[in-house]
Length: 110
Image (cartoon, rainbow, N blue to C red; front, side, top):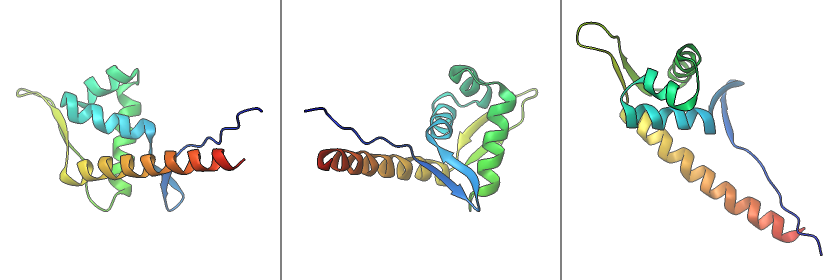
């Protein structure tokens, strides 16, 4: 008998606009770990511009600020997740976990 596997991806939209997906969650996690949007972008192989616009989009769509950006200069810049940003990462991982369970159960019935 052949093994059947049901697969899928999770993304979240707000008013039809892309809000979150695995790439954006990874970006948020890298920002939290590295304390810098530029370093997070480099570590993911993204341009700073692409990472910046992803963060800007998430911040504009979210009900509360997710990433706090501090401009560079004499003291240097930086970025960090807000409390809301950390909560949304945790919630996304909970949804992803539940989704994997759902997909596994669906694969078992085919």
